[in-house]
Length: 53
Image (cartoon, rainbow, N blue to C red):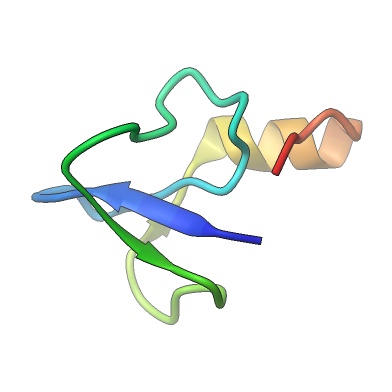
């Protein structure tokens, strides 16, 4: 699973079908970030079982 956040933002995304999934100008990592916020939309999609990664 990849985690992305826009440069200048503290919110991490991991569902590629999130409306805020960064497509350019972003930081990326392969492990869950230890700091920063986790996207509420991604959390909801993961809970509902429709998170695409």
